[in-house]
Image 1 (tube, one colour):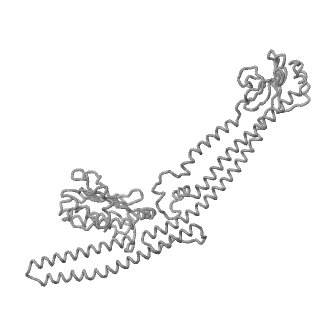
Image 2 (cartoon, rainbow, N blue to C red):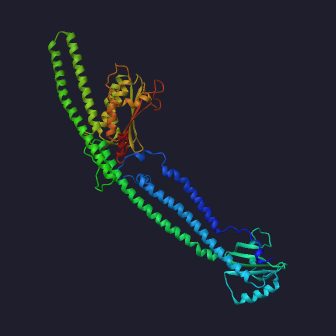
Image 3 (cartoon, rainbow, N blue to C red):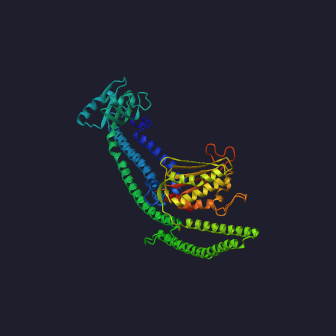
Length: 539
């Protein structure tokens, strides 16, 4: 059999196949994570939408940074570039290895063709003699040859090339193209060669150690990959820089809107002067804020004018009714009617003052001085203030305060809000029941809880209950104007807190008489008040 008729089996897998497998796994992972990153369909958390001053929360800033449009766009381009580059590196490494193996195969084939004894008439003994003479003259470390007789004796060269491990199918003897990695811990070779069958049944193997060659070409795609990685890193850093700039500008907009929502009618968005889209947006927002501020000022002036015009006549009316009641003297019927009219005038004045107070709190025009105080002081004052009234109505007023529970806010406003909550609870609680006042700290907020065992409020009506003039009870014998919870909601908004209505789920509460009502007034600690306040104003 001549050299041209040698059987050429498939070459065994190389180290490049492992690289391809690992790269495929990396690409599959990136493709799996890509859609959710592009769409941004992860559920939003409260911290994603809550307002906070710039750099006040590093974790929140980092999370917002990863979700900015500019950073997403930069990441998209970097991601696509990474996939293309990864494919190019794999393809380039495979191409270089194919070029190398083709070159080695050409050298082996040229050597086989040029050998005078491999013409179909040579045998192993004659070929061994010729090889000893030629190999003694030219010795090459990366090249090796071996000669085996028909009876299996190695008469020349490296016996390693004739080992069964060189056969792809592990079925010796084998001919054709061979490739295998052999050696010990000290010396490793990756042989690529051709096993040629001699006419007398022997085998002649010529192979090259391509491992040093592969070690020299593999750094080429790796170096290209490192260069691309540096380019991607620079592009991502540039994206981070521009994203941080956008976050700062958006934070200034949100900060101005937050101040405006909390009553600062002079708050405006700063215009940097770049004449970009953010400056145009800031100008539009400032124009609308100025218009809203002007309208609010007009309404405020009208309200103040109405208050001035009505408050004095009502006071005079009440005084005249009182004087008339004292002047009439003996006519009890007329005196009773005058007293009822005086009481109605007092209720109108109280109603008017309540509405004005709520408006002042909602617009931030009321006098308020936030400071830190102990919750137990407020509960003790409420106990002293309402303890006697609860006893008269056959109620048990129970208070419980968590140890070292501190509150940051305006003490007078919070006390007024809690007075409204306790007053509501006492009004609607049935006799021989318990009204509970609790204070505790949780999740960065100090919370006051007032619970009763009355009829409670349906879940569908709770949002309506905190609005002005909303009386859900049809029992007109219970005094009130539907302003108590509205004032509490205004105080909660002013402090950046929240008012929550729910069924009384406290141990022993509302189980026998009714579901009861539990109102929770939560006041955030400094540092988180701004975020919750912005949320509530947006709501």
